[in-house]
Amino acid sequence: MTSCSYFVTGANSGCGLEAARQLAVHFSQQQQETSAITTIYLLCRSEEKALAAIETINKSVRSVNGKPNTENLRLEFLKFDACDDEETICKNMTLPPGNDSSPTIGGILLNAGGFGDGKETTPPEPNTSSGRRTACEIAKLNITGHVILVRHLLATQKTDASTRIIAVGSESAIVTPLDRSKANFVAH
Image (cartoon, rainbow, N blue to C red; front, top):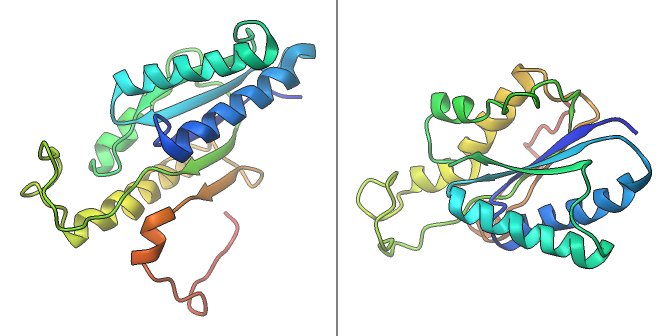
């Protein structure tokens, strides 16, 4: 088993937190007999919420394994806001020293997002024009930021054909129709 890393956007709550927790529990059990290192990057807007999520995940690993997180499993925060501009997203995806040599990313879960209901955000979110999400801001939050992220990871060769990229879109799928007959899904 070789060392690898996983990226989960929106990993501080909901589906993202549960996905990161499941990955951590799985790899902590798999790696008790190997020296492979798995790093799970929690991509979140808030470092405080990400650190709380990491503590929650570590508690789950302890409860399942009966001992603390193994030395072969790392949980790390990377700042990610899908509404940021391309330069900021790419800058924030610089891996901490010592982790840049990870051979490849095993998976990317594109989970962060949401949709606008016309209501004001409380408090107003910093990347919105008026405290209300516009259609363009909703598209950026659900699609564009993730495209920038994946394109950056592909360009820096941290992914290859074996990398699994999974886009999760619960409520956003309801308001963003997809004409599958016109879609061109190809392997990267």
